[in-house]
Image (tube, rainbow, N blue to C red):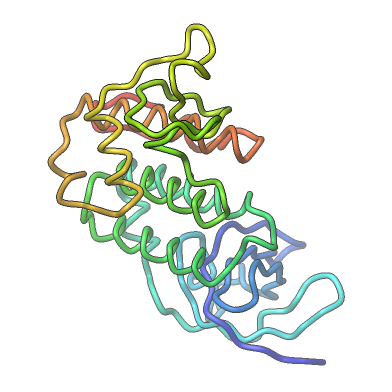
Length: 246
């Protein structure tokens, strides 16, 4: 039976039988992996804690017909414990791994893996506001999947300029001629914050006001959920900087 090794982020797990667990992972070189970790729920398991959501591990697997089998797991990033004790970090991380899981197998690239690892690391260390880390991840993961929002030229007709109508269904900002009736107008400072989140310009992101980050979060959430075609359930529990769940 073929054996392979890779780095992977644990996205989610399911119980299987009395002692086993199905583990869904996003790996660096093999895309999304669905595997069985046998005996992992027993207290005597040597690598049970290494195969929990938000953890990054070096895993060795046997290749199976429908599900692979985890043979070994060594911790590379123990982010789960620091994330789990903070509600805002936990909900943001949950939305990130749920988004990664929603992406198709063809989109599960090395860049997707590195982006998710970087986001979880930043959350575990408390480097920035958790909701801003999530917003930046969502914008950048959409861009890696070919769905980068237009934040300058009209997303529909390409007219250059600084447009202030944002329509998630049309791909971002649109000019006044393309904007549907009643579409929301967005402040220029909010649009600049979206550009900073997409670039990863954390000096600008951290300097933004609570109102600006809250407005940006609403637009990012709407945009990501529209393009994923299904709601991100974890977003319902995420707390933004104003203290509101979005």
